[in-house]
Length: 345
Image (cartoon, rainbow, N blue to C red; front, side, top):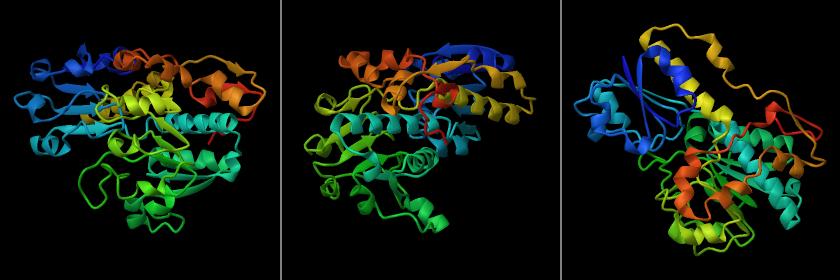
């Protein structure tokens, strides 16, 4: 069996070598010629999986080790009879930790009590749910907005979009969709940006395009935190230069998240082929005993991982892709023994 794998997929040799011959290629360089004789294709977000890529190939299984879906033409795969599986939820803890860590740093720098702020969470899927749980542990009131969930689950604690946008802190965690009853493309736009004021802290840690950047760059806020951008890696210099934190789509790039992305696809491929899972693969992450001595929550979180280094790394935007591909080791909070209690949920 022949497998073509994005060479940034975590531990791809250790995890997928048992299935056959691996050809590892940078995601942006995977093309129709690369996959022509492949049986299995495993990608991250930089490969456009569509008819142009797969027409004429013998690929029967496509796995995406990331949660975003806008790089995959699922309708084409279904029509072609190609099995598709994505690692939904693999990075939810990492992104939630990114948001909480940033809020704690902002509270210190701007001198506010985050327990007296409201947090509007737009998109309450895997990431939004994790973030809401951590916020509750920290005493932050949340305003949850997710029309698809509300429609199917009749959740009485959810609010409409305008109410969520009126929160003190607003953060987006939706997929990027352009059709259906509730498309998220340019969900925040010229028609509703007035809910965002010069006292709002605004995050995009969802997908580029969820917020209309042409409007955002003209709109004064208290602080912008931007991890996901339109036209990556050619990011908006105006927004980058004025953001409190401008990072290269790495909120979900913890070691744990990248491992889970590969592992979830591994399990799906085992099921597709009728193969038995190797239980030892679960033990690939071995951080050892990690201790943190920070005397307060801000110092503790920054000692675990300081996201400012990610913003500094792409002050020259030419470093965007290389930094993502060679991202520093970052473990999630549950690996650490800390003197200061961490909001682990």
